[in-house]
Amino acid sequence: MAVTRFAPSPNGRLHLGHAYSAIVAHDLAKARGGRFLVRIEDIDGERSRPALTQEFRADLAWLGLEWREVAPQSARLASYAAAAERLKALGLLYPCGCTRAEIAARAAGAGPDGPIYPGTCRGKEPAGGRPVAWRLDMAKAIALTGPLDWRDERVGLQRATPERFGDVVLMRKDAPASYHLAATLDDAADGVTLVTRGVDLFAASHVHRLLQALLGLPVPRWRHHPLLVEAGGRKLAKRRGSPGLAERRLGGEDGLDLAEALRAGRFPAGVSLGEGLEACP
Ligand code: GLU
Image (cartoon, rainbow, N blue to C red):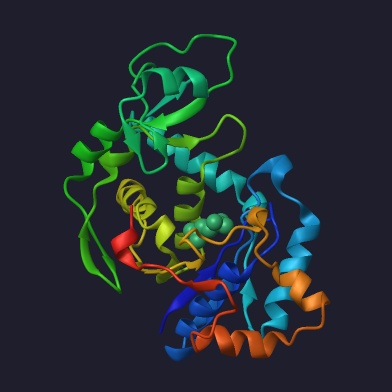
């Protein structure tokens, strides 16, 4: 029995890479007598476009997938705030008003999500008047949990190394929560037992494992699949003109045939399955 999910963000149309990811999650749940969930990750305020959610449903149905849709992130803000309060009560979060430019200028190296926060605001009173994000005091958090492990079905047991991210943002300035906090809480609330997603999010699982330990959440398994790539190895992205699912659907292509082709590893011209975990950050 496995509960899997596909969790698209409605800030751009779905492309073949999303179709592949949704099919992987759907088929694993089906093969293991489980459930396949769809969760709309619409936490990005203005960047989230409600019309796209409707389009996503039509795209997934066109591919022949069956799913249960769970609450979108915009309906779960109270759970993010409550988790942040718990972490604050443990003394693990601190407010940070630094701008991107300030962080880039003093970055303590490069992490999987970008420049590593130099710790400027850690242990300081917040400067008034600036909007703040709330960051996790990574060293304190790791000291509290001790070493943690997690398992990816394709590559096996992993020792969690969330320290590579530095003090990650858990509550954003411009959105109610960060991806890391929201996705971790949602997967637990939805009873997801197997988190399937692309290898581009492999590193994020180190942070998610830490958050599970801090918040007393159940620990799922993970399965990070290779990404579909264009010639040259770049991952598909709508902005580079990779064909969108809605375009294909509205152009009269047969979605069931496309899904079968993706399952069989028959990809459209110029598209292939990229490296697996060798390419993991
Ligand atoms: N909402 C994320 C995205 O569209 C997916 C995150 C996940 O699968 O954990 O990239």
